[in-house]
Length: 119
Image (cartoon, rainbow, N blue to C red; front, side):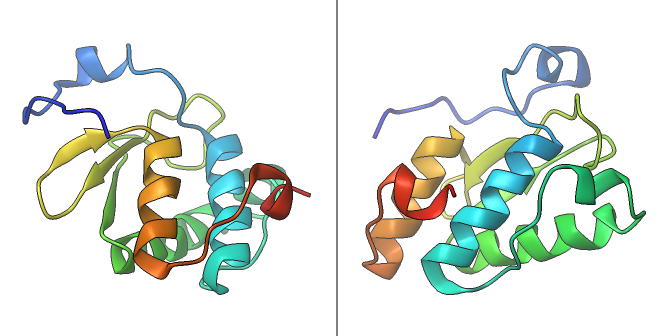
């Protein structure tokens, strides 16, 4: 796993972070559901169409936290342009979404390929 400097990004720097959106959260829900059943499987539109995206974000955030991964989302987590950071809770090191998935699979001992959970 790559090493990252332990520093916080200000809001302007966070705008430059790639990825992070309701689409990524939908993928998180699918991944976590297949990994250990800790969330439901939601499509991206479920985050902003039915008005319960904040609750869904909290469920995903809690599921990741149980696996040692934190989510940082300074803006509305249900937007299509939301910036989300993934961090390892024990070290506060920023990681990518893919690194978060790898970490979660190592923690649970349940290894899956992309096609196993993204259907």
